[in-house]
Length: 317
Length: 317
View (spheres, rainbow over the protein chains, first blue to last red):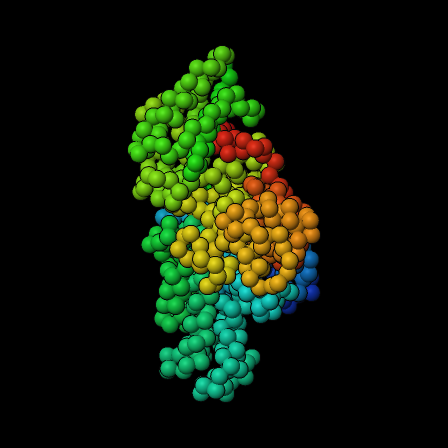
C-alpha cells in the first residue's frame, strides 16, 4: 500500500495543499483563499473538507502518514502559529489540534523557510547533505538551518531568523520594530528600497525614476539592470554585497557545506548572484575557504507544498 | 569499579591535565610546558608519560573510559589540530592517533570553547539545558554552541567561530587576516584597543595614558573604571555594547535558552556586564524577549581540564 502525505502552504492570501508521494509527485492539488473566514476554526474546516475531497480522488489504496503545514510564524515544537503579522487571526492558533479535529493523522507544523530547507533535503539538491542552510528571498528573508541532519529549532522552536540579525545599527526601519535588519536590505522589498536610496543620491538616469516606489518590482529592477540601467545595477550589487557578507558570517557560526538561495529574488539574475558569491568568498574565514558551495534551490515552483510534505517524511525516516 | 577520564588542556604556553571522576572532582593534576620540543611526537610522549605517572597514583581500582583534549584549532571530527597559529608545530597534527600510540583509551579532541560549553553542560550551570551558547572571553573570543543537546560542529568540525563574524566592515585588523571581526572589539585585547582608541580621540585624563599599550591588561582597565576613570569606563561600555549586539544576533540564529560568558574578561565587573545585558535586551527580536538568560559560567578555575574531560562523558551518556 503506498504511503502518502499532505503538504499545506498557508500564505497571507492563498492556502494551497497537495497530496504528495515519497518521490515528490503531487497527485492532487487545490488552493483556497486564506482569510475569508472571521474565525480560524471555519478556515480549518474548509481546508480539511477540501483535503478530504482530494483524498477521495485517489484511486489506489493508500495510507496517509501525516500532514505537514508551512505557515508564517509557525512553531514546530508547539504545533501553533504565534502572532503572525499577515494573518487576521491574532495570538496563538492551535493549528495541529484544530486540524486533528477533522483529520486523523499526525500534524507537523513549521515556518516557510524551514519547510523549504527540509524540502531541499528530501526532494532537492541537499539529499546527501547534513549541514546546510536555505535562505528564502521573497518579500522578506527567511532561513532554515539544517545541522547534523536535523532542522535547528532552538529551545523555543523559533531559531533561524537570519533575516532579523541586525547588519546596520540604526539602519533601515524593519517591520519587526527595530532597525537595520538584514531583510531590510536583502529581500524584494530591500532591493526596491536600495533603488530609492540610489535615486535619492545621484542624478543618474534610470527608467526606475518613472515608476512609483510602491509599483517597482524586483523583476523591474532585474530587467532594467540587464539593459544597463546604472541605478538598477547599483541596487542589485548592494543587495548582493550585503547578502554575501551575511553568508560569510553565518558560515562562521554553523559551518555548512552549502548555502541554497530560494525564492523570487534568485531570478534577478547573474549581476546579483555574482556579487553574492564575490563577497561571500572575500569575507569568508580561511578555515572555510573553498569548502562551502553557493547554490540555487533545486526545488520546483510547488516548493512550499513539497517542503511542508517533506516535514512528514523526515519524521518517519 | 569507578570510571575515570583524563581532561587535557593544551595551551600556547602550558599544557595541563587532570584525572577526573564523574562528579567533576580532579583526583590528580599536572602541568608541563607545551613548546619545549621541536617535534610534536616528543611533546605527546612527555604528556602521556606524565599521564601514566598520574594514573599510577590512583589507589582505588578504576576504568579509564577516555581522554578528552581541548586545544586551539582542534577538530573533533578528525581528531586533529589544524594550522594553530600559536603552536610551533605547523600543518595538521594527528593528535588522537599520536596519543593512542601511548595510551589505550578512546581520544576525543575539540577546541577550547567547545570544551568550555560541554563542561558547562556536564558540571556547570547548563546541566538541564539542551540549547545554549558559551562565549569565552580571553585573548580572543571563542564560542561553543550546544543545539538539541549536542555540540554544533558543522560539516567540517569548525563551527562556532563567533569571534570571527565581521561586525564592522573595514574595521580593526584581525589576526585571521581580515578586518572588523568581533574578537578585535570583544576580548581582552579588543578592550585594550578600545582604550587606545579613546585615548586618541579625547583629552580626557586617564591613568591608562601612563601605561604602554602592550602592558595594559583588562584588569588595569577594570580597576581604573572602578575608580571612575572615564576612558576605562568608555572602553568597557563599548566592549559591552558590541558584545550585547552580537548576542542579540546569534540568538536570532540558534535561539538558545541561555548565554554563558566565560573567561578572564567576565571579571571586568558590573560596568561591562550591565552594558552587555542592556544592549542584548535592546536589540533582541521580540519573539525571543524575556526567554534568554545571560549568565556567568559556573565552572571553576580548572574549567579547561573539566571541559575536556566532559567531552568524554558526553560520548558515553
